[in-house]
Structure formats: C-alpha cells, structure tokens
Length: 324
Image (cartoon, rainbow, N blue to C red; front, side, top):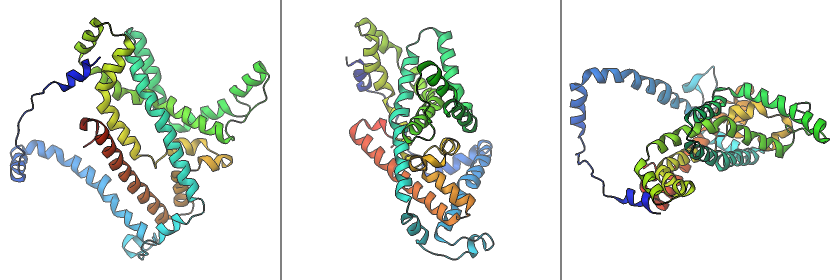
C-alpha cells in the first residue's frame, strides 16, 4: 500500500519569499519596538543563564583555586584532560555510561513510540484518557521518591522477595546488589517513568496525520496493522528521526538522578558512570577543574554524535527526517 508515499510525493506549493537582509531585520525590530521590548527579558535570561556560565569552562585549563578566582588561578593547559584519560577507572566509567545509555536508547526509545501507536488505536475516549493519565503520572514523581519505592519493593525483605518465598518457595534474591538484575531494574524503571511522557510528542504527531489517508486505506480493506505500518509510522518518521538524533547526542549522559538514588557500592562495577564520578570528585573532593574537563569532554562527544547521527539519517532517509 503506497497511500502515504503517494501523499507525501504529491507536489506541494511552496511560498516564495526572499530572505530578509540584516538591515531589513533591524528596521523590522525598530518598527515593532513593542514586541522587541518584550523579547529583551528572554534574551537577557539566555545570556545570563545559558551563555555567561560557559566562561567557567576555562577552569578546565587551569588549576582552579576558589581563593584566587577564575582569572587568578594559573593556566595548566591540557593537564586535567591528561589526568582524566589516565585515570584507572576511566575506561569503566565510559563503558558503563555508554552501555546504560544504549540500553535506554534501545528499549526506552521504541517503547514510547510503540505505546503511542497502541494508545492511538484505543477508540474508547474515557479509557484512553485514563490510560494516558496513569502513564504520565510517574514522570512527575522525583527519582528520590521513585528510588525509595523501588528499594522497598526489590530489597531482600521487600514485597517481591516475600511473594517469591511465600507463594513460590524460592530463595530470596537481592536484586539491588546483583549486577545483572540491577541494570534490568535501572532500565525497567526508566521506561516506566518516562514512557508515557515521551509518547506525548508522538501522539501529537499522529494527531496531525491526514484522516483521509486512513479512510482511503479502510476502504481498500487495509487492516489496523497495515494502516499503522503504511500510514502512521511513515507520517511520524520526521519526529522519530529528530528525537532519535537528540537522544543520541545524550549518549555520554546517563540519567544521573536515577542512578545516584538507586545505586550502591556493590554495583559500582556496572553502575558507576561519568556523572556520578563528576559529583564525587567535584562535590566531595572539590576537584572542580577535573570535573569541568570531564563535562567539556562529554559536551564535545555529544556534539560530534549529533552531527554524525544527523548526517547518517539525512543520507539514509528523506532530508525532512533530520535536523538540518
């Protein structure tokens, strides 16, 4: 069935509009000075909270001393970058970070899409709204509370072990200190918390699909699955592509709040990630320069990943599925 393909391939009328010059843009700003004035607080907020803090990236190249300040601290070049790459546990930290992020990307990303597709097929509006509300709720619960709930459920004397022992006669298992079960809990709880919220953007994209496509497919005898595969998924492919690119960019950033509240020393081997290392070094040992160097490294890698993933998606699909 090529209904969606034919619809997208249909010639579209594009408005021809010349690109305004800098002088024309400036005149427009002056002409609509009331609107320009309203823009000033936003610009100021961006400058103060988004760009001005970038100045502190300089301490990655200095031996930062709080007493001497940013400009008084001595320059040390690439010393801190050399230190973090020769740190004995650095390979393990990077491996854990990438592994957990890939699992989240591999399971959490398609889970939200699949949930949105299934939710869209529910015709009973009251039931649909109830399901939506119940799946959105976990997103608003902070990880400190969520982690406490998970610890109570899966600890050695928690509810799950009580059920296993009392009803199935099995030996209790400490899920929180076993490397494999801890990672499974980490990924499962992340999906549970974020799936409903992440599906909002896909539901919004699905709502924008032309209903005539579904009607035409229904007349042609297409089943629900065929309509999803041939119309819904191709129609929301640009949104899927953009969200995928953004998530790939965060591959070096795991969910710090979740891991910091759930992990313990016995699962450091698989759960200690770059972000938890940064907090330990930065907050407890006051190694601000090293942790800033680590943050800068993460940012550069994330930027490169976004460029690469955008390039790959642009080359392997329509250009409308990529960011630029």
